Length: 216
Image 1 (tube, rainbow, N blue to C red):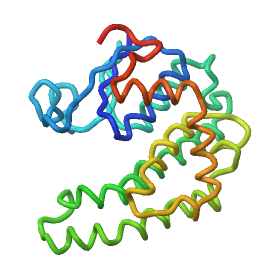
Image 2 (cartoon, rainbow, N blue to C red; image 1 turned 90 degrees about the vertical axis):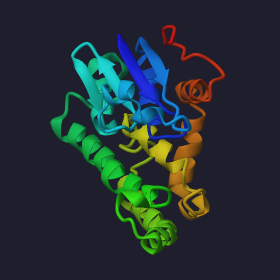
Image 3 (cartoon, rainbow, N blue to C red; image 1 turned 30 degrees about the vertical axis):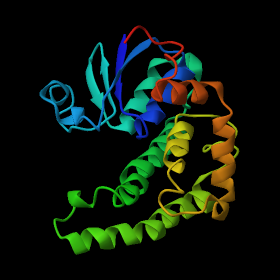
Image 4 (cartoon, helix red, strand yellow; image 1 turned 180 degrees about the vertical axis):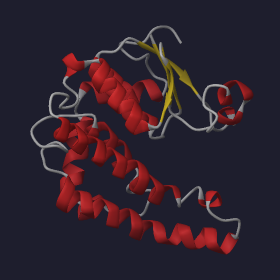
């Protein structure tokens, strides 16, 4: 059975939603950033990167959201979370998720984690000031050229959708007005109505156990 390590209000939500959409049997372990548990020896033995999410499977540990989303889609093909029968279409899903991981999330991280790139306090502040511009530019490309609608890949819901939803949740905090991105905002609203999304969010906030989860 899958064991999913996560922290609330992080990109782990994307894989958490996908697990719910897939109807997977899984357990969860909540990692407290406030208690610095991501740097504890116990967690570093699971994920030496000291970040979330991580996923323990019967084959070993997986990290990185695009990899976990692909694993979930391929492990639960009946859920139809990716076009597994079409190599090009599946690669398109991977390309979108890779863009979210390598560009959008990195632009967002400059707001709180500038220390990853520089020790200069002035440079860290400069990175923060740039965030509304860089995050908006990344989402504008999604808005105008990548989001096919009504879902990321068009008519079919895929694992790209929970990932976009997760990062779009941070727009306001990054200084970006969602009204400037009407198609992304509509996608965010549509996602919020999905039962699997509601279950994953509620579970991460600690109000309920995931519908398919075993005891933590």
